[in-house]
Length: 92
Image (cartoon, rainbow, N blue to C red; front, side):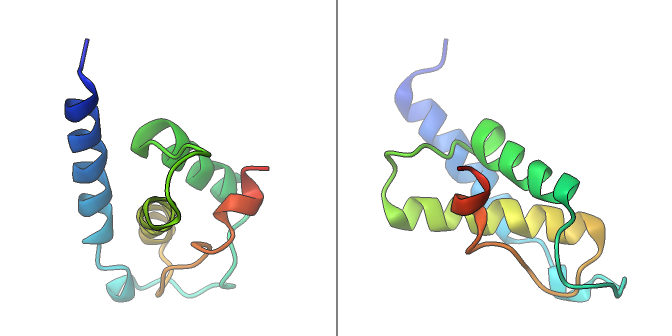
């Protein structure tokens, strides 16, 4: 079983990897809004993969939201990162 420090390190690594994605270089052009399935994907990545929790500091939540939205924006081909300010509403 992983210790708290190891888990925190893994969360930071995943966040940094996703923040480094070059979303502005993706080519697809479409309506700049996530579909419901893409919003669900962002929520799953943020909560299950990166470690979003309700009791985290606002700065940590913002970094996780940015990382999860960067990943999904990159994967679906957006030219910019979208949804990072909406994640907390999607998780309600």
